Image (cartoon, rainbow, N blue to C red):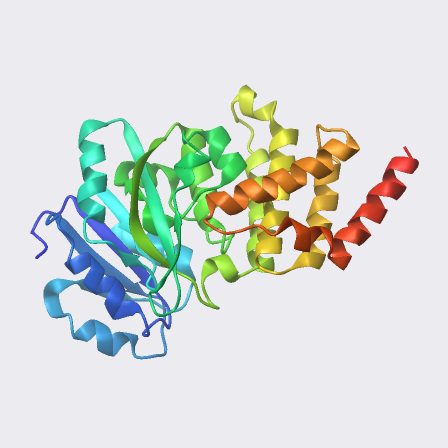
Length: 329
């Protein structure tokens, strides 16, 4: 049972997610770490969400707002939170039983940290295991540079110190659905230290409405986040000097993401955009694209079929475009 003065506040934003909501809440109420509170922010749901929340009585705190998006819902929960640390849980995800206990143990031995990240496992709509994702194999150290390059951001797998969230101003509703990446980049630029709990702590559910399947909106939003990031006037000089390679790597990441979500035409457009920032010779750039797609797939626990990509009509058209570009330079 939650105690009067929680150390951790778990914020669950939800919108028309009655199919999964109870499982998400139960996964928090069953945590092995006792010093937590549960705050559910209903972002104007029109399904059975309110009926489900009423069944929990005073075991949770629930509030309802008119529909404003997940960024505003998370920020609302932050304002209500009493804990020193805040964990966000999307209503279609599930905490594993010792998630909070394992992460708060890291906090106790590393008091300088503002973010404690962890691994996750992708599951289907029934909760059946798809893949295990342990991003620290590709991204062993979490720094501003590595956040920018790899973007291993999943709020449900993270634990945030509330003071840092307050300093940052929280999630920016201008960048859905990449507002989580925007927040992490701002925190890292402010000097917020992050590290891994090298343990899988959450089930990240994959379905047609999950963020990782939003395709084009996610790509456009992430591109806008990077533009906004580099428009800041007081970035560290070391980061400013890396703007072109970071833009290149980000555009390649977006292209991989579009390939992952089966938007090959748009994938080609982002690879073309990356071309102007490439630090490599033409053939080296093509090889780097393929290597990057493989690495990004591994970091997200998915397989990359290079043969299928190379043999696609979209890739062949891209190669013809490159041939024209190189002949004209």
